[in-house]
Amino acid sequence: MPGKLQSLTAPWWKWLAHRIIRDPIFFYPLASLYVFFLNKPLQHAPYRTVVPLLVYLFLGSQTFFAYLLASWIGGAIGVALFHLQHHCNTPYRCEDDSARNHVDAALLGSTRIPLPWPISVFSYGIEYHHIHHFDVRVPGYHLERCDAEGEAQNLWARVNTVDGLRVLKSLCHTQFRGSSKVADESGRQPQFVSFWPYSVIGLQDT
Image (cartoon, rainbow, N blue to C red; front, top):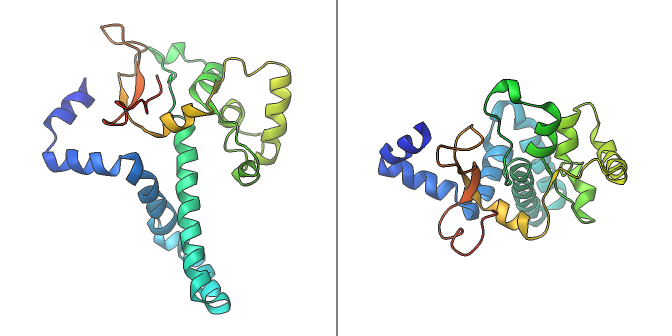
């Protein structure tokens, strides 16, 4: 169990940094800040500087700061939706590559997240990740219709549909317990788990 051994032998400051950064309260805002504001500065510098500058010059400082805040919050929501695409129980695992099945990996290893209107207007189909992995050629503007047609034919009966309270619980998942095998030596299935105290108060999807 290399992952467990590494976590036990890691320096305390690495463990503490990991614990803080991966805490759900901090992770999504920090990830939004990194991905949408700091990552790849040379490639993304034009729209990260020109657009805010135009907002500041033509609409004023209040709108400028409101724009930055809205971008930050929107980015955190986007990171949360990306997290929900694969970090929901039960994860799809195979004992070896020969047993891996493309259809099962798409339907069982990805999620379907029904989003209410008007959030679905801005998601561009990110909630239909099972279709994306089933066939990446389906464009985002056709994903909703594809999902509706598949549901009418009962194609998504095995899909890991995550909604309601499961969304909140899955957002708190921070660790993967187990290995790449279907089950460990004790018969325990691999599972996404949450940090304490989230797991104690029930914010862990089992």
